View (cartoon, rainbow, N blue to C red):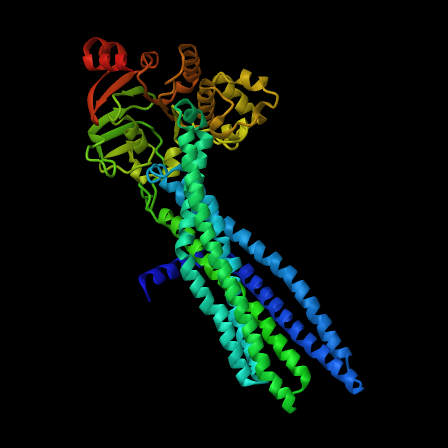
Length: 582
């Protein structure tokens, strides 16, 4: 077995393992599909025999028992109708359950990877994987497993029945069924492998480009890049259409070959049966029955070419999902997590860190201490290690060397969720979801009451604005918080931080890019939030730095100086240059 086929088999096995909680529903769907297929084959064969027998009896002028075959026909028709309805109901229910299971599984795999392993992925690519790629996997059960298992069980039963009448006829049917069920599908699957993979990749790139166009339309228009981006989307669309056309041509060819093989097999079966009827060795009614039985048996295997044609796309989608989900988290969770400490002073000892693929250290033997309740600031040029330090403190990365202690406990021994529950963050670019104001606020505290929302928004200076809206807290925010100004978005982030009962607060450029009036309003809103909390501020704005107990001056990942705003302004030229520059 080749390495490629082994890899594909492993992908299928992994997908089936993920589907294990719903195997009962999936097996029931296969059973109903099998019953429906056998009922349909039996209905056509018995109907052919019954009509031929009635015609022969009428010509001969003899009577026959027509009640029993008529009852069998009605029974098979009812079974086929009820079985088809039940099969559709059960298989689609199993598919939806499976897709929901896959989405939850994939999100749980993604969450520990953020942001360290996801920063190089486009948001549109991630959206494509969690939505379109998982949707593609519904073909695994509906269009691959169900027809394959039904064919594996039904074909031997049908061939056994045919062989009881004529062995040569059974061998002829076997050759035709194998051609439609195996040879043509393998040919179409081989031909559609590359177009199928290319279709998945082109569709993912096109979704990412379309998402860029929707979210960045303002920037594209400002910089005159809208036409160029439109041409790029059109090029991707043309590539996708070309891949789809190739697959459609292959599908049409396989369908034509399958129908040709069906007709040739039926004609060959008649060529074998007619001489037997002429010689009197076979009753005329069996000619119609066996010919129609062979014709109906192909219904069991006709979905196989389409099933194997979908296999390449399904495997490509699964490969994209597993390639991301199999990445180890940047910060492994401790086997036996320590309990959260009672104190929240922070001590950083000889901390070093280097980003993958980078030659320069982001942090180089950095040591400092932040006592519980201190308000400190980190200042330095871009790349000096400020954001890296806060990311390590939040547990997004694992340090290469050195340690961070929280209340005397190494944070590498703390569960990530427990660690982050003790830290609230107000960032320069707060992410707001396409949801209501209340939904966004309750992300910080799901059990927050309306009174708690009012109190937090009042402290953040946002309550009057919310009350002026027609729908209040139920007002809908667009993608990334569209509908709010920059200052309102920052104050909403402050309200979230106020709701979160965390003793440590990280402020990452909370007033950057704001006009002086809005900046002062945000600073005023931050005052109640900073009270009685350990505050780590990343900012170069003098209005914010003046309120800090201590300022740590960073350069090239090392501590260059420390002191309060007044002393550093008087004694440190580098500090004064930074303030003038920013």
